[in-house]
Amino acid sequence: MPVDDSLFREAGARIDRVDEVLILSHHRPDGDAIGSTVAARAVLRQRGKRVPAFLLDPVPQRYRKLVGNGPIEVWDPAVHGTHLERAQAVLVLDTASWLQLEAVQDPLRRVEDRVIVVDHHQTQDGLGGLQLIDRTAAATGLLLYEWFCALAWPMPRIAQDGLFAALATDTGWFRFSNADARAMRAAAELVQAGVASHEVYEAIYWSESAARIALTTRALDSLRLYANDRLAVMQLDQACFRDCHAERSDSEDLINEPMRIGSVLVSVFLVEQPDGRVRVSLRSKGQVDVAGLAARWGGGGHARAAGYRADGPMAAANAAIVDILGETLAQLAPEP
Image 1 (spheres, rainbow, N blue to C red):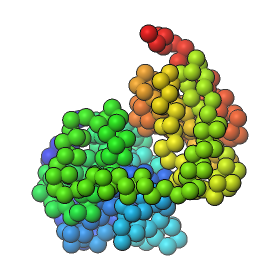
Image 2: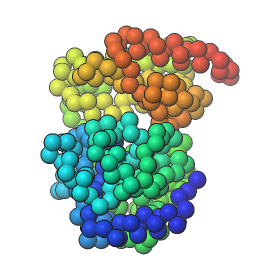
Image 3: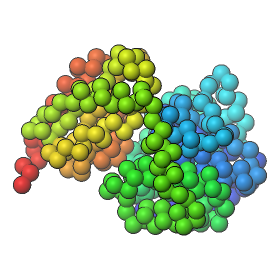
Image 4: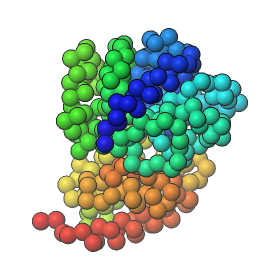
């Protein structure tokens, strides 16, 4: 349910009492994490705060224009550890899970009482602090927008663009089921305030690298259908990334490609990691709760979008998820 205004006021009061707010978001940052970080940093700077902001992985190519002239740093424990220790408040965006903050877990636990979490995911695993969490919100960017509006905090243009990008990317540019009236109203208000939606779209989706296009081709070449064509599986190993001169972030959103197939109810995308483990991403059209499946392996997410990490090799991870989903899909009523 929506965050109560009293929590928004409490979080705002905490920030107003301090001079510095450190911002963190999760590994493999997406449009919601990056747009939310850009927006929160701009709004808090305008309120006179020092706002060091960190991501746990580099900003993907497609979001670099969104960040603008103020690059967000990538967390390095050896360099930035003292930043967290001295921060008077810590704003954790787009996750409420320790698992997604692996690189910064230890120092963050020591300052947990200073943490403010803003998140909308279904899965949580005990990350504490003051929690502004609403699982019904389409994006973390939507919660930030509602927070800033509730406190009448001015949002400069870069913040408005970041919030719109957060909302638009997490709703699949308003195609997914989470693009509800609440999300649409916020998007419309941001456009009315001056956001040029086509410019945000072009900045993100017309800035792809040649490497990403090559990687897309390799992923689609790997596509296999199972369970009477209701399950789609793609995979990329480390050799694919080397051959395409691609980064791991270039694989973002490729899981959605098989969802265009009418018979497909669930899409699975397996990506081999440098350490030999396998990142397994899951998407559902709604008939299968993939967050519940991901939780079996220590992962999580949303009912329609989730993921987890599996031990390698790729073939074993592939077989395990195909077996489970094959059984799950077999229990569903046949399509009319």
